[in-house]
Length: 140
Image (tube, rainbow, N blue to C red):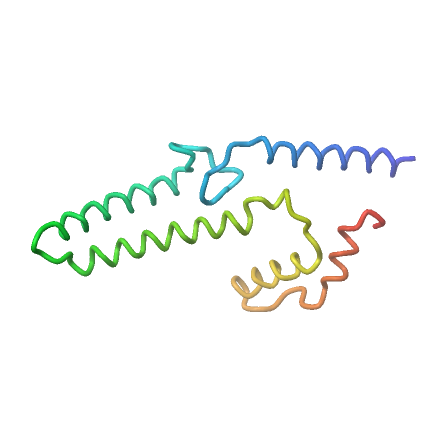
């Protein structure tokens, strides 16, 4: 009896959580669920990157219109800013619509492996995809 009440509460909580994610206005690039929108459908971080790109492109364009060539550092900073924007968009593609995708044990194994390699230089949970699948199944 207690298990049934707990299951109902957990499924309602999960449903409310996912509905909240779907209804929330999120950044156009990174799609971070907890970052507040700042301007033009961007969070503060992505907006800063977009403004930096616009500013640097304008400076490069001014050099192109004159007889001078743009300094290397200016072109380098523009490439870096564009790469930051590309990385923000990739992050949004990878994690932004997570509530719309089916997550399986292999996805979790891969993410935990990346975390382990990044922070403690060990591959965590290698070969545990089946255990994660079991935990995610409704029969657990």
